[in-house]
Length: 435
Ligand code: BGC
Image (cartoon, rainbow, N blue to C red; front, top):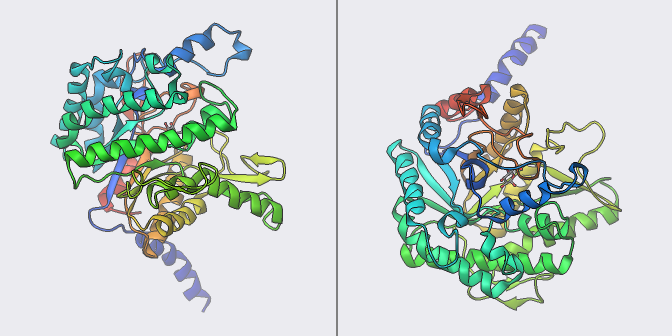
């Protein structure tokens, strides 16, 4: 008997591992964004704030450094896509930088747009599908100077002008559209907690910007559908996982419930049910916004604990990443179920990954999250793909280059690319279609 249990304990883990096979056609992918990788983007609000922050004494700066030339992806994309192809990547996510297409009002730079199209073609030539995001955090300086996100009518008119130029031009090379990256994070990081430019802490502005982001999403949806009725349109949504710091504390349970409603669900109330739910509104109908989601893209990294006094990012004893975020794979499992319940739509994980310089840590992070995704799928949640964040190390917003999320490292001087241990591991996962 003792022998039998010993043999079983050796064999069972490998059987369980081999059970994490994903369905045929599962979209194994990588993700990146324009500003974080392209380099020499000097026409947007982040660039503008990097310059103004630079004038302040070091201790007062809210941004750790400048984006500068990033990975010079604009010049080096062929190299990056060669490595992605070598990894066996099935889909790659990238974004279009609004300020490259419109460095100034009214005059699109068609040469820049043509380079995006070349990138999409070169992905397709490598057998890699494309998923294109139209807004990943940044806005042109000239829009900023007219009030930016707070000047709704002007902003929407200019954003629509951008959409009308970009969407028809790129449409035939785009397999999936993501109009907006994290329509809930831009308002909260920039206007509620003051972490991103313009570093505001104003709940009314937060709500205005959140509403505008939903309108931006819907505007893009309609332009895309006018171009091609069957093009799948989603969103890259950072569905925040909240939990009470003390699981039994009723008030903290209540805070978690309300935070979920006010940070996450209001978005889906609008785009799925066409309703401006509180606190975005008092329940008024939003017919133009209703039904503007074909699939949900989920960006997931961590959980947030809620104490009576507010959120805390981790507890004593938690495993945390270089961002100071808890590793909490169960959260993605819970959210996948919840999202499917709310939307009844297929899901693509559009971002998941960790900042670390320890490759075993990164691999474990991916493994634990993919295991939970697999579990949710085996229970009926239709997850169609998974995008590791990020293809390369890149500019990590307020932290500049101090955080490493990439499967590929990039030498900041020579720009030489090297596939990391986690990249080789991911290649194997893709080959085996599972882990
Ligand atoms: C953003 C990425 C960012 C990542 C890690 C996501 O919220 O979309 O641009 O690099 O988180 O912080």
